[in-house]
Amino acid sequence: MIGEFDRIARYFVPLAAAPSLGLNDDAACLRPDPARDQIITVDQMLEGVHFLADDPPDLIARKLLRRNLSDLAAMGATPLHYLLTTALRADTPEPWLAQFAQGLAEDQARYHVTLIGGDSTATPGPLAFSVTMIGTIQPGSVLRRSGAQSGDAIFVTGTIGDAALGLAAARGDCPDPTGFFRTRRLLPEPRLNLPIHALVHAAIDISDGLLQDLTHLCRQSNLTAHLHARAVPASPDASQLGPDWLMPRLTGGDDYELILAAPPDHEAALRQACAPIPITRIGHFAPGTPRIALLDDPPLTLPDRIGWTHF
Image 1 (spheres, one colour):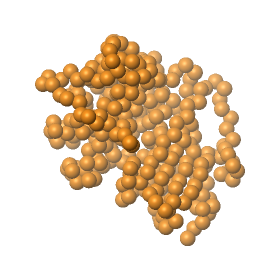
Image 2 (spheres, one colour):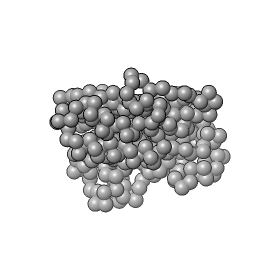
Image 3 (spheres, helix red, strand yellow):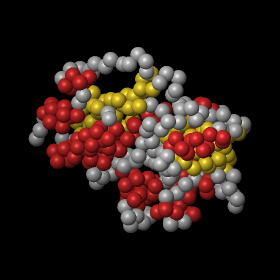
Image 4 (cartoon, helix red, strand yellow):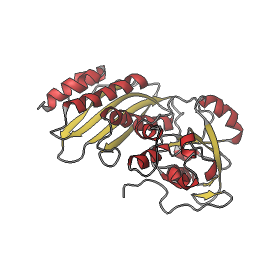
């Protein structure tokens, strides 16, 4: 059985950048750019909660990075480095770990981020991982949840609910003949580097379900969101499932698309800035109690549980 430090040397040192000091010291040594603000986020994934035991290890690693990259995308930041923690069982097979490290390497190259440190421990229970992602942004450019204004239109990127359908498919509750939903669950696409800072007042990524994350924008901006639920974009595969899957799509997590609040007259410029990623207008913000009001006819009712929660 390979030891902890041999494991680090074999699988993680090759991923490390110069600020990590070869992962040989107690901490990394960074020299921040004084002309840029730093944006830092952390997210974790637990076996049986955020991924399934039989999910491919390389895709678990890539999703771990992409969840954090999506947080930076929602703030408008550019990623640079990350720290990784792992809690592995003693009997975790080396081929599993090699595939996990390969997944990290693939997305490091794709998104131009590098490992600079972290921590490892053993666990008798479920596997657990976390990433702390560090990015930068031009001072004064950060996108906040609290910036939405009355009259702003509500837009979303991409299609909504595919990852939730991927989980339903993994549980045998809905068909996925092409594997599209599975791919969307395991390999989200963080919407990084969109030149939208001058066009958008507020943003949030969809990690816990569109309805729940839109509610966060409402609360932080103290506005009511008037939503056309049936206007929320569905992928062609999701559309084939019919209307019974609308609310599961709107309450399911792991989409990692963006909700954007922007003036209506910015719509054309916003579409151009985000191209080729599609943008859909799904509602607007107005004064009122922080909540979601549905505008659909025939009317729809919000479910009691509007998104993912751990408690």
